[in-house]
Image 1 (tube, rainbow, N blue to C red):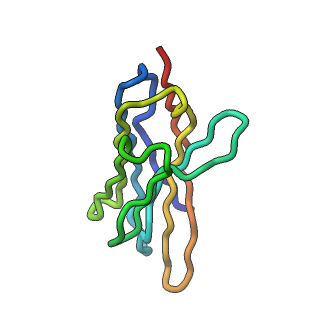
Image 2 (tube, rainbow, N blue to C red):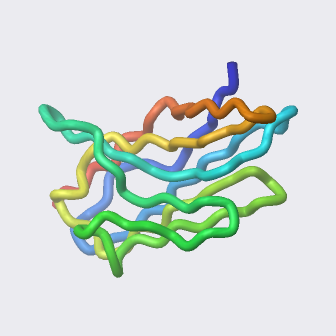
Length: 119
């Protein structure tokens, strides 16, 4: 079992910023892609942003231009910089990583971190 380690959530006022971090422990696998999903109360978990190894970032429509995903490949880490936060961004944010062992691929999830945008 691979445990992703997330950090960086919290309470912020509208217009503020937060930075989420996620790290994948080193092991005998490669990290194909990492991303962030979020789930608000009573709603389904949806993609926020993702970035494949060597590929460009993908963003949900509502966060384009405000959020930036980046990866630090040497550290098996990903970051989500969130600017100009809005109350609708309030949710539990989950890190997601697609790991590969040879021809086998498995998706892992972080434990989730709460982001609350409120005045």
